[in-house]
Image (cartoon, rainbow, N blue to C red; front, side, top):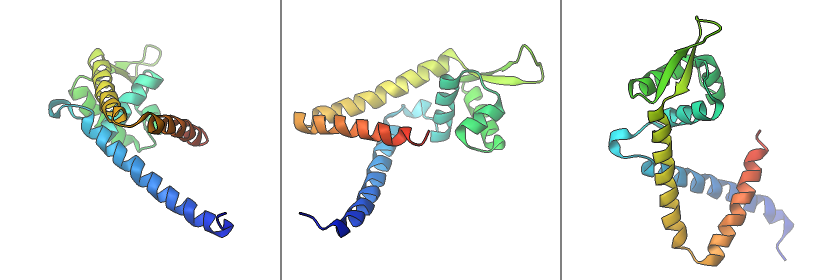
Length: 151
């Protein structure tokens, strides 16, 4: 039976290994996300996904959702708008307010990005034996619970 005093050291090591593995997987998925002609920065992709998820948003609402400063959001939205992925639409109730909404091109870009990432993971998962696949399925449930606690 393991010494109980070694549990914190194992937990510290687990936290470090988990952080590194998640960061490396995230980097690999970003690399798979898009062809070079349509590559977006992580900030741009995150903002695009947030606009899709939360609907038309003001720049201030988007900045709050992304937890960044408004000038950063303005730059990100400018780049996305230049590429035709989002559009600024004047609010019908208050014409001083513009809302950022996803364009059809933005929706297609997100779909292509997700498809490429999913296909990459699918190829990698198929290389694992069924026992490791089952273990990963359990780990995904644990990770989802871990993330829910942050909400």
